[in-house]
Length: 220
Image (cartoon, rainbow, N blue to C red; front, side):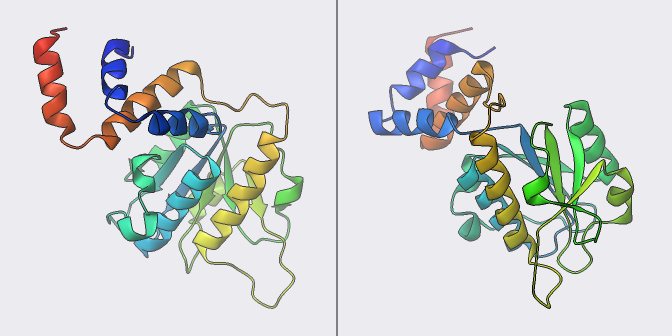
């Protein structure tokens, strides 16, 4: 449960514009779709995918780091790491199992011939969209576990796009269709409160000192 008194205390520190911005952004946040990236070697690509998640309203990004454990490139992410939830996994199995338990179908993004085009993709089902490495794409393990496949229509000689570009195209397309649908894609009231609290804490300098003082004066 969210400590509503503590939330009110923190939000009282923020400007009215900041609080209004939080509410406006949260109106467009969703967990109906989530994004997963597998072993992306160039961390700036993962950071760019995170930025696309933030810009287009995807609340969670899942990162599988079996081979390449690196930090988010803050210059590329441009602060998106404050507003997007990052779930880290050290195995494909762990990531896929976690997402299935949350009710997501596993969708692999690949350029294969028989894949579903983004414009034909069924947006009614909660879906976890997987993106692979720059060179090799998704691993056979994910392809075997996938419930479906998705691709971007291309008409040139080049058969693939950079992961950050393909993720941006797919996320923008699907979230735009989602917002123009009758699907209940919004965050729950409880999830909105959780984000308001987290974002308030992320916005306040020296939050640990302020939090310690608050609970010293207001024991639980």
